[in-house]
Length: 401
Ligand code: GLY
Image (cartoon, rainbow, N blue to C red; front, side, top):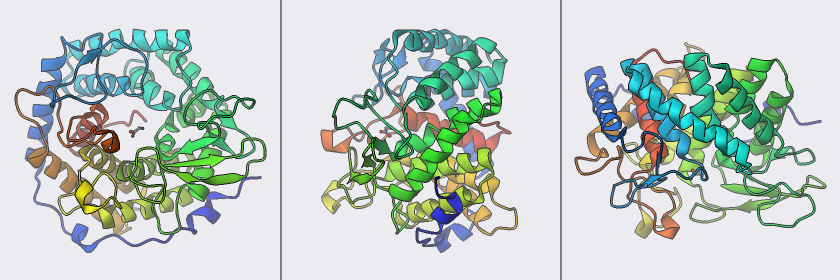
């Protein structure tokens, strides 16, 4: 019997919302509308090149290459940008591009290239968004197949979804029984699947994974580790380890941002106040550690000589903070604080992190994998969440997640 989420969220220390977010930032609605219009112009300029192909996960000298590969975890962020541009402008060319790309997502399911928790990212921003916006039943069916494959990655004994690799009880591997914080943002596919089918199995997998993450990947100080291994036979916790952060016991800022947004969405689907409390604790840790301009260093614990920023983490956090503010009781003073923080972050990204002519991306200074030399570039998910954040701030928007 899993512990109740209410018991879990009390486990982490909440450092409180920093005072600087009590004041509304200078950024105006006009500023954000202009930033959104500029971003949509850039998406439009890229549409021919990436009509039925995808930008690479990160750029090279601020220019994305084009790939027709179905593998990887990031293709749907471009499709998601096309859906956002279609919603904001009403232009059919963006919808046509998204629908053309959806054929790739269908082929990927047929090919069996699906041994990853990233199915949530991949099929939420392509098929769930497509179904929400067009009502096309084929997209719903694609997304449900993806949700089935994601739910198949659940290990009963530890109560978690394995992030990477084949889920094979008989073969030892580094991936076997390894949970990662990023998965919190893949759970919406499962919550959506239960909502649309009435079958509670998907949501039960998602809720159990969320509880296990709260118990083992969220630390007592409100920070998160990147990955955590479990014994899949006994369920015993083995220990934390990083894959993309600075150290096993450090806090990778993008991971922290994934959990803020992930728990805020989980709270909305389940109505669990404990998830909302936990999202607040995680958000406060993030806001206590982010740089003054709202863009975090890639890892909050990296030494000064590794002070690269991650604009993509800031964009994810801006969306997560806005989502959190939408679900807190209106009288809660954190509502204004999280909205202020989201707006300040978007204003800073628009003013100081957007790339100019000569690039086909939107945000500079994203850090995919600094320890492998991949930083100071555009990352396609950072571009997606930047535009989602601007849409949240300027339009009435129904979440894809
Ligand atoms: N989910 C992979 C990453 O954030 O880099």
